Length: 282
DNA sequence: TTCCAGGTCCCTA
DNA sequence: TAGGGACATGGA
Image (cartoon, rainbow, N blue to C red; front, side, top):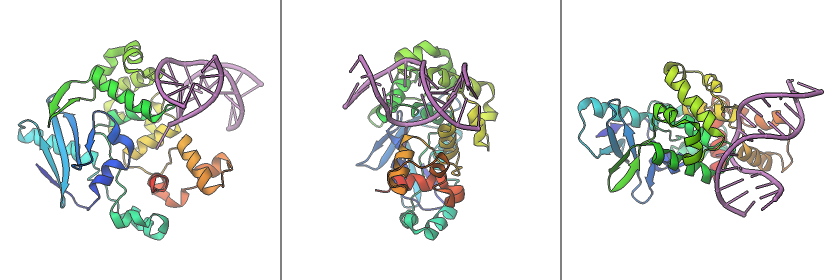
């Protein structure tokens, strides 16, 4: 099936600008410029999608036959992942004003890939806290293998990202012993329970502040999840942010907390994107 | 061994 | 309101 897009964008860049493409159950074939992953539909049917871009269309191939309704659901999930409903023009206008990121506008970059469900991204953000990226990759891999459903498509084996129910039922000691998430087990279970008890509150929110109610979500995770729902007005202050900003703007000398956090203020509603591409532009 | 990583919680003063 | 130890895990 095909999904037509409103604003042109760089597909490869949309997939790879953010590290999410490295986390299971996603898979990026750089050579074929194709993105693969399993999706779980409302009916619990599992479908593997292969996504690529041709002209102004996202091409979505699937490994099984789908009804019209199921195809619509796949389209919705893919549209969410690639932020097809977001308008980037205001950001590009700012990029023209502040020439340091003018290349984003020229190459239609700025889109950051997200998971098909907000719950998956909540868990993955928790996986990035107080650890190394390699461990984040491992936690995602183990979570899907241990608690997801095995499926295959396009010559590869995949495991779905587990549901909140599945994670809740697994319990704390299982998450520590088999998923190696350490003390994060409590946070992950809290996220799963909150989503199960009040799905509307957490999944349909227009305010990223509700995410702070989840244990383990502090300022960094809050702003990371705000980015996921398309709100870029806060920066994710973590060790990488600090290192980058201190080196780039303070000659290696640590400034005050306030100075550190306000470096990208001129970008207004787009601070996160400005930081992200300033940090990753090399 | 010890330290610490793309943090946050919780207790203390 | 700010400061600092604790927290699971695994690599250096």
